[in-house]
Structures are given as structure tokens and as C-alpha cells.
Amino acid sequence: MTTTESAPSLAERMAVKLSELSPAEVRVAAAFINEHAEDVAFLSVNDLARQLGSSDATIVRTAQALGCGAHPDHRD
Image (tube, rainbow, N blue to C red; front, side, top):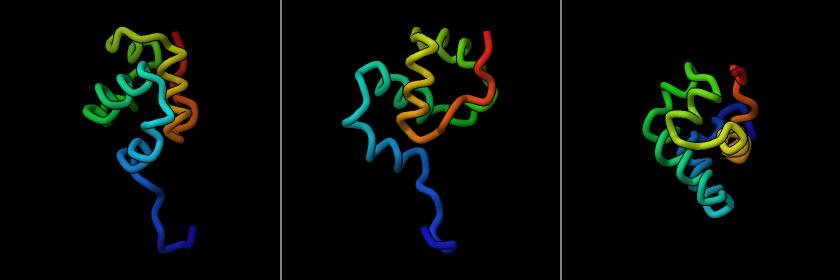
């Protein structure tokens, strides 16, 4: 990547990775991250999982699959 190129957006990463995600990961990505991206930065993995009726592991796997890395607030 050159200095004039920017990193792909979350939506662009999702479009590329969508076929590689499990059904649960697609639900997490589409239902919450894509629609409420601004909230994700302020919620713990546990809170995110509870809101989506998902597991912590699915939240973490989804973030990693989309190239987001570890959630900065992975706590109970």
C-alpha cells in the first residue's frame, strides 16, 4: 500500500470476507457492526454478545475475520 492509498473501510472488508464468515459471524457483522459501528468501540465484548444473543468467542472471531484485531475492552 502506498502512502496515498487508505485502508479499506469496514464495509469494504465485510464485502470481501462475507463468504468466509460463519452464519453467526455474518449476523454479528451485519446486524450490529455494520449498522451501529460507532457503538462497538464503547461496548465490552460481553455486552456486545449479550445484545446480539451471541457468544464472546463469536464477537472476537468476527472482529478478527474482518481485520479489526482484538477488541480493546475484552473483559467481563
